[in-house]
Image (cartoon, rainbow, N blue to C red; front, side, top):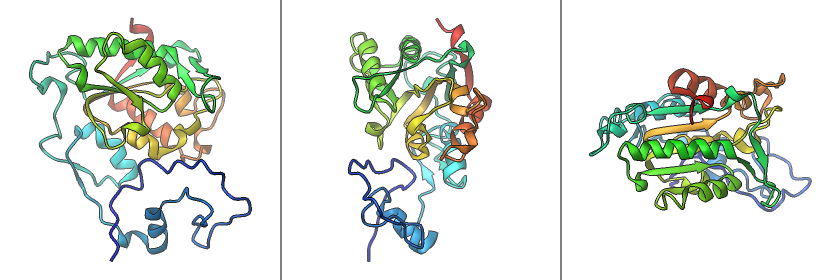
Length: 276
């Protein structure tokens, strides 16, 4: 008997060896042995279907609103937040003041109101990683607000998909608040913090999103927070609503666009020009 435990809808494998030319998928659409991008979990599901899978339905980390989109999109809307976490907020922690931040589970800070493309390419980084200085500024402002509300540095995490953005966030924040953890989404898999700030970086006129089109990576990103998730992004770029771009043609099947629409409706939406 073989037992596997895991979540095939979280981070995909990182493959550094190029796929061998001429490799072909099997009849079931699975990768051959020359391509490690398909996990063993996925292979088993492809071969035998969902009958071999058992899903744990109750989660004990997140406020129910934080888990809502992920549950609906990826888990058949079957996830349930245990009553011990379903409604917990930052304001429920000892010593935390009531504020616009501590009384809401999700905040979205949208930079699309500026009409500018804030994304830059760091040529010095491997694979020309992306960064966004405006999102760094907004993250620092939000962190300051959370600390003024009574949060401890150790209760806050800042994550981003891009290593160049990690470097800029560390440069801006580490000297002031050395105990705030800053890292990539990949490095935070399996981790959690009371409050998570998520900087999505991409902000351009062509609606290019790079590997943000990988919904498994976004699934990890949006589910690290326990009580408060702050998403900092350019919603128009990510939704594909600039320059006639069609988000539905992306490999994510419109996942990013639907998340942006959901955030605009369900989060405490704030525009960056009103944040100083």
